[in-house]
Image (cartoon, helix red, strand yellow):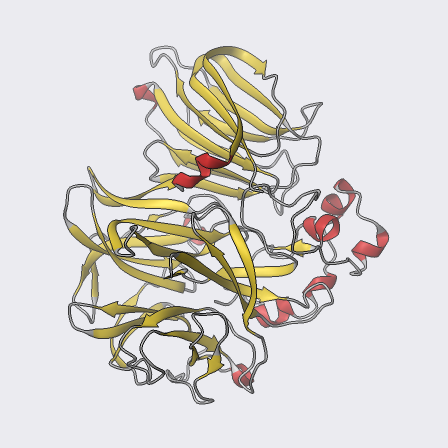
Length: 524
């Protein structure tokens, strides 16, 4: 994908490593003058004891990462590729594809660069996708791994084929000519390929400005345009996603997803999706307005991928999603450059299921199930009633907090929730809660160190008198999962090392934090 703002991502990558951190960010982490001038040493791949690197979220070993690529299941492992720039801190531009593997979607093992940047005359590698060519349709043998990748020689975006015959460890160019040439448009990128089993052919969705172009192929090399999906009110469309799922009522549905920017309409700028019907050439949405996989500020370039059972078969009832914990309005504005020599985290991998609701079908997200295995300490506090404020006798920078917030609908408090990432004196914190006169649930990161101020809000029904909340807090992020998981708020934040307190509050009334549980987390 490319930066949807007027400034080109190529410009952002060039010299990005010598970025001047915002004065507040730099001062807050005590960055030395040498660090601010761009001479930061890269952190080693081993996490070790670091100042701001997350405890249980995926982060790049050093330098820079951005777009996730759809993970691929091979030989009992999920292979996760992402865009990586090894020269970022030195001011170099361009991205390669780096690989990590995981068996449980929480613990990842770095495997190094799979497609080096500037490997051929077509330039560096942007986003794309990988498939296993089981029948060898592309001519590189049965079981070859095929990557369709956006490259932009002389600034002209097109799709190029790369292939691997060593199970995704390394790739070779399948030719200098594009397999999907640019017809003469400025935005032409982020191909997403699936095998259309109903019609026994490959299908490709491609981001083309305000459209998603649809193409078909028998061999992954020659593509024919068959349709498109257009939206003119969601900014430049990027990173398309298309898949079929079985809902909780047993029915089968197609889902089309995109990274979109709805800020001009007061909507998120994350992963938008529609449920609908797909006939191999066109997608017809059930509703005109999209649903959103996230309502926070930092869940961009997200991808979903299927779950596989113990025998390796795909499970149509479960997918997973992973999103970049950043956004193009402020991609380089991070103190981790000064403290740990890197810029690039992901939000937690989610388990995603399709559910039927009163208004149709929607995707419900929960933190991936294996996360519970990484709890090093569990605090079960029971039902905690609050009127005013209550400080918990718990200090942690990385945890999973769950509770059901309840109140009397006839006499509700004005505002109830939690201050997390709270400084000893309380001035710095992230506020997460429900403003009942609104009525809305919110995550407010303004009172802490963050890339840019802001508060995300989604409506709730206060007459129910209850709100289930699950909150993931780590060194560089806060993620709120609301109710059944239809609503999630993901935010990038940078608490200081001592900002590890938790405060409960209920202003102008009472609230109970039912079954309050805090699991402190760490991935070795």
